[in-house]
Image 1 (cartoon, rainbow, N blue to C red):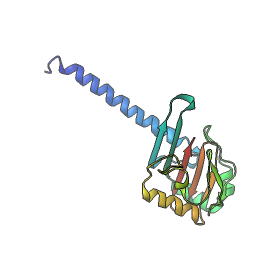
Image 2: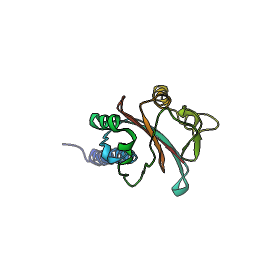
Image 3: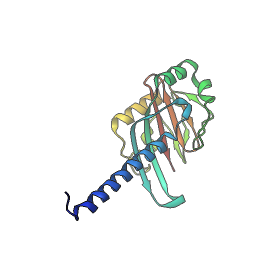
Image 4: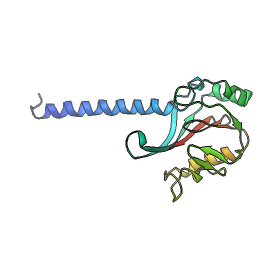
Length: 176
């Protein structure tokens, strides 16, 4: 039998664990909200975010890499931009005009201009960017995808969505 002083600690620890698990579920659903639901993406492979400021005027920037399901990758590879243009938005993100890579700069990414196929121009650490510490392998993946044929991108209300069917990856870059 547990002594009285330990029971409240166990209850508090259990409540904290439940809150943490709930937050993780909320965060996962929030990240999936940037990609059209009809692509049936369920797995986030990488995410890096930075938040500064509070409330409606606060700022946030990030990059999210998703695993694209095989059937969605095949559909994009077969039908390309016309297929992507038919995907309905999901409330938070609308993507209208899809373009094939290589990227044709300049492209507006939130309130910044991407002037080359280097995503670090707008999100990585440095004096003129949003200061994210992005894994160098992710930077190479995104830059390679933007610089070579075979992927598609669209600049939506909240950021830039890149779909790469050959690697079964989708990448969302956002900020404000």
